[in-house]
Amino acid sequence: LDLEDNKDIQDSHLQGICEQLSLRVRYLGLKGTRIRKLPQEMRKLKHLEILYVGSTRISELPQEIGELKHLRILDVRNTDITELPLQIRELQHLHTLDVRNTPISELPPQVGKLQNLKIMCVRSTGVRELPKEIGELNHLQILDVRNTRVRELPWQAGQISQSLRVLAGDSGDGVRLPEGVCEALINGIP
Image (cartoon, rainbow, N blue to C red; front, side):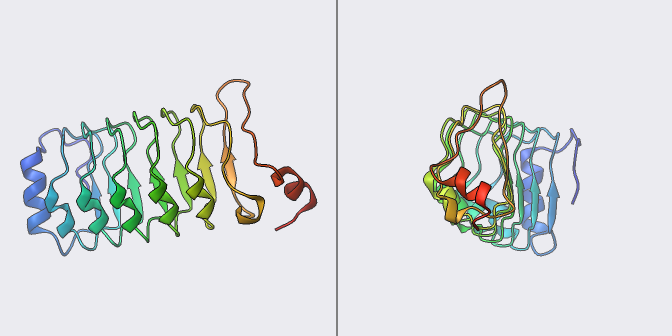
């Protein structure tokens, strides 16, 4: 269900959509709408795989987001969301998490539970430090920390996916890799 840039959609409409189309919706695109709040009824979208709420007026994700067990893509870029709910850990099928251009300043340690996460974008946020639990994301392929204050990656060399790409920097500053990582990368140690 693509409602992108539909300025007539209001919060009350979204509640009705969740109740009436709960079994059928796999994609919900709200980008550019005037939605301010995701309703608790979101939990009824049991088969939802893709949720785009970027460029909306949303300032928080409801706890019920954790009940969307089939969610693969969560895109909240360009919103006023300041934190991710702890229930994010329940999204075991999530492979893309995009929080770029939000006021988020900290990622909860629960992101380390997202074992299928392949892409994480925290670009242009207030994030200064990544939680050490990110080192548990064995399938992570792209970590975008550009235009953040992240200057150090928290995991050990043995846990890094061989195909991980870290997109970093915003000025001349680099990102310091953990001890042993440079040697592992140079020597080709998996």
